Image (cartoon, rainbow, N blue to C red; front, side, top):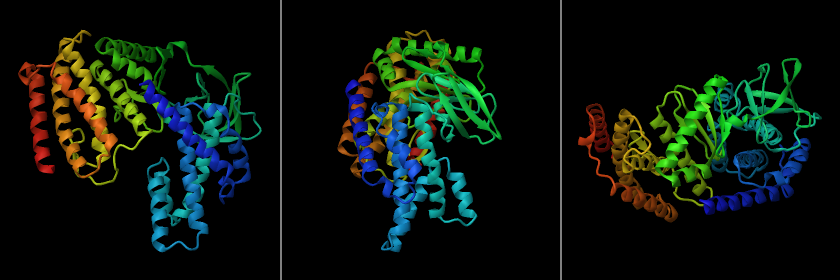
Length: 459
């Protein structure tokens, strides 16, 4: 694991070097790069604070690369008079595809309906990205804070646990907003003063000063940090933290290597109580997992923590080398989605749900060493059988995709290693469906019948 993270550090450093090179040799020549932005950006991009591969720095670098792409595309459309209609259309398609996969998608469609063209919209939207680069740096990375000489417009990032009450600052610090700004999800930040622990922002026509606080020690444990959602009070958050601690302890008992992987790949747990969310993570935010602690039992929690950690683990591989030849062809059956998916969908699914298989295998191999109540132990048996069944179906699809040259050599090697681990675990387990109780047997049989039907119809 240490070697993998070291490779990510090297890859990150190379990307940062490329950005710095372009900043010195080309950025200020782009038409939408004004002197104010360039002056500030030119200072912050060369700071030593950006050196390490971590969640904040990685997010910022992705944001910068995306902004550079938009700025260069705008220049291409505005200045290049030799573009053919086909080249112009291709450039516009890339812009449209980018914006529709951002939080600005709704605004994009509204402006298009109002008659604005994509170039006009991109010129307007890229200003938001430029603002976010500066505000993200000064809120999340800068040790000096913001001196009050200029304002920053910052868009809250819910994936970091931010909401109408809370903004997170540099490591270990946050603020609670006394008054919700009318401009949410944007906040106009006036000053961040770490010397006096004061944070100034505007709401309407007045300024509000609040205290900069340190994250409570109770929210930091075993190298992890817990971030509550807006509806959680201290008692609820405390109960959730205890659930996480118990879950981590159970994982450590079941398989110490799983626990070590969690410690290496995950650093922040963000709580959500959204009814339609189980858990998620993003490649742009390494080490950060959002988990729903309120609709899931204790076995589900073990699964969710490891599943998102599996995404991080896979993303750390994707950061350093290409594993698949991506396209949008939905021709491969995903047992988890119960539909046809592109190669990226089933590749990611197999390599992340394999962690669930490893979890349930560990519970069965250890003969329930974590003392799950009988109903959850029976569920673990069923979930092992289900995951094993779905992984086998998915592996067939992956081998078919490999024959179509959609998986590159490093990706095939990665898959084979994962498949070998699964088979080695299966050899240690003799659980069959007749060992399930009546409730779980019925659920498993319904599941299996549905999977067989869908697979035969779609593949």
